[in-house]
Amino acid sequence: MKILAVASVEKHQYDFIKEQIANQILQPQEVLIMIDTQPAEGINNRRKRIADNQAILESMVNKYDVDLIWQIEGDSVLPPNTLQKLVRHYRKLKNDDFGYISGIQVGRHGLYCIGAWHIAEDRQSFESVDYRKKGLVSIDATGFYCLLAPKGVWMNGIATWNGEMYGPDVNWGLSIRKKKYVDMDLTIGHKIKSGIIKPEDLSTCNVRFYVEDDTWKFKQYL
Image (cartoon, rainbow, N blue to C red; front, side):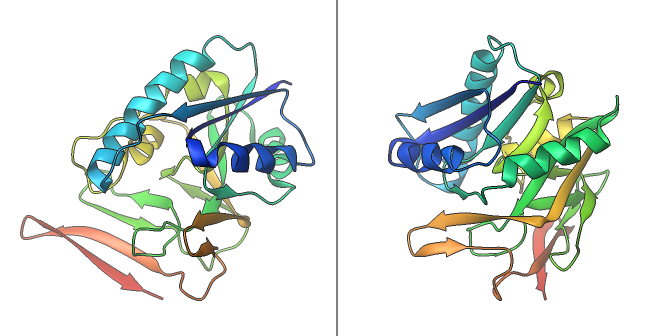
């Protein structure tokens, strides 16, 4: 079983993510790190850029003869057993309806909630996975920070962004009509300028976004 680690990173993140991969107990057979030489500024522009970069990554990954894709982000702080745990889950869960398995990470845009989501069928509301849960939890989508998927499934994901309240990574997850999970015990750090934020930090909360009177609103709760 051959694993390809993939990441789209900014130049200053390159050495850091290489080190995170090198520190893994279980090593991927192949590594593909794409450097974004023109990263966008502002959340909306960055979301468009993420969608574009995912399409570029897909064209590059298509050339690799591997079984599994391990996608990570340049600011993910990975425990040494991250890939090992993801592969163990995959071996237990794999079937024709398996989509992907991910760890959990806290977002950094003001609301420190878990970047894994339950999303209503009509897309008019969505909420973060409850940070207090343990073990495996079924979700609708996650970020790209740390997920493991069969290559065929990963290649079929479509990252788009057309002004939704959530990003292209969530649209990518929603486009995969298979079962997706997070391991609530596999916590991934998120490197920011002031340090590292973690799911176990006291600042972590739950958030629900919803449409009311044609306006997106949110409710934050502990």
